[in-house]
Image (cartoon, rainbow, N blue to C red; front, side):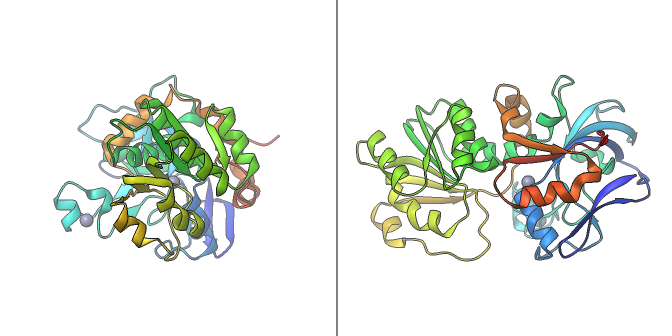
Length: 338
Ligand SMILES: [Zn+2]
Ligand SMILES: [Zn+2]
């Protein structure tokens, strides 16, 4: 079968590899669609601390069960599924206290074990989550990033929230803004530095402005000078970290979803003076996946997918994605170039 293989620093190639052989409590999934994620960039650059070549990348996938060896559960061959891709140790404090998603030694399919950017992927039956038959593959591949957004929004109460600001208009920022809006927040504003991303955000019906002064002006106007009730940091950039504390009100909440690659400057005095709460948000819990599956068909997700490619064109797809000007780039393994 064909698979998108990370073969060493800056080498991602479509390679023929043997079809995986499943063991007990495992299933073979024929993949319909699999998305690139920001974290794939560090794997393929060779800078990810855990990923080792050769590796099939991809953790944002959906497909159909073609074979399985399991005596329990309700899933059957033919069912459409996505995977909850986390692998937790089961022994650490987080794992034994109901938070395996922040396991001390958290691992993921697509990072630590072969992922789903391939014609087929072998996965534990326990990781699979059923998708509605009518959900298109392109939407199924967005369940994982949507679950990231659902988790981020669930980190804080939205009760009485009038103004929510989202910094960063990439897939996670857009999805977070859509989830916050679907929860009834009256004013959701999103910012980015790229005009193409602002345009995409506006096409989703979101209020989008340039990062920096424009964002601050709009937030202050909507909040009568107080600042946002909640801010979702989805950019992971030094400038968003520097500015975020000035954008929330006293006793406001900042939820960080963006993955920072190195330490950044944060205004601790503002956190102290305004008693701001800063909360981390890492990946998702299983319940967030189910919420994402139930919510997906009510959101305008098709527009988030800006490009799709066949598996043979994975190297081209990745260089397009890496330029950072697009939103979600998907690989459709069932599609063959003409
Ligand atoms: Zn991801
Ligand atoms: Zn653990």
